[in-house]
Image (cartoon, rainbow, N blue to C red; front, side, top):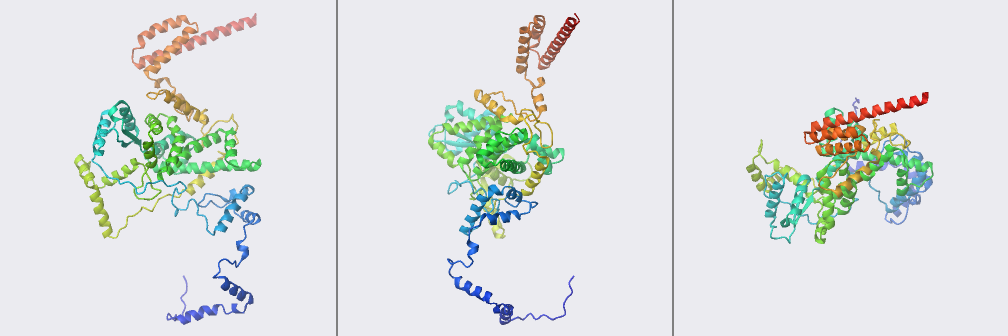
Length: 607
């Protein structure tokens, strides 16, 4: 592309030639008196850092300078790593000028810049105090037990084996034996401990990883129709099969990332609406005025998203941060908020697990409380932001073990051989990699995908359709992002959750939980008579027969009661058939009585 020159190039350049060449470049500058004065002043002050060469550069930044820079910002520029767009500063400079001046002048005085919160070179979650134990406890693999703890007998066998391995026998009730388990095993184990005196020194601890996975599933059930279904399509989950996978949370990492995108994009639009309203009405924006603004909102879309995101989704992220840093305070605060999500649907095992876990800590003796506070999570690598619960640490060990298993379906003897020699095999692997000069140390690396583009794009979608502009009235319908009409009581979903919690506290074994309905179809399906159990169906028929008798329809009541005596012990299908016949007869009688009353009224009018 470029024409080669014909001049020969002499590559033998001496050091003197190099020096003389660059010295000759400033030959013209030597004659400039101002430049010479500047150089002399600079040389005199270079060793004295207390003296200021250019006083104007160290003077405090003024509000006029700040406003001048903000006015020159381009509105159409995308946000940077801090997710703050120029439009924020241009529209809200009257509010932001004072705090921005404080921040910038503090940086000027300190002489050090402030890193972005999204800077990947920083330690993730460093805003949470690190409370990991030093040194970290050793983690070893015990003898494998080929038993699925899904029944009382199997759970009892597992508990017995763990006791034997730990050395805490039934006779030694003064020493605690701590076991981690999740879901159904936790529920079954808790019942066994309550009923057996020889198990009173067993402390069951649920795994943080499984709690997070299931609370994310609960969040998806609540928010799928309102927003997550639309967001998942925007993120590439477009086919019916992909939609089912996204809704079912088959990949926890992707599900968590979808929640992050939804949280950031929706929260920033919520705050934008609030700030604009504050500027227009000359209100000082702060936490108190923000919550007052939410309470006064009559827009069901805005109110629902505020309640869901701030009260339930944010605590999920706070929970993960607390687990990563082994911070009991953050973990407890997060659980105290998001545990209600388990009561928005029928998640019986985790309803019992979360309530039992809270109760266990409250009633625990001081030494057990101290232990729980210090050992919420562990970091195998030693990185302060890579803490995990015991369940996920075990999952990681299990994956390491599986890579040593032979191909095909492993037998029990294969599992035992690998578990007993896993530490030796890992050491051989580590030494082999070192001999091949292959490094595998990732203890200082924490991966976090940049989702700023996805957040920005979905914010644009929410802004375009005005979903969170808070301009609808109380009479407007609650709709999803894609325009579908939602259940008329969904925006007050926390009321139903509180009713479910009260029902659970009154009867933990078999509480009557009514799920939060996101669509009218879900409500109709749930209350359908075909879904009732025989006992529920029996109660409904008995109630309706009593109402018929109280309304004075003695003849109908006598006929149905006699027939009901024969049907009530029959299969559910015959009970349903009887119920439908009874309802049809009552509706027919009502129609006939209305027809007769209409005829009577017309005769009175004619007379």
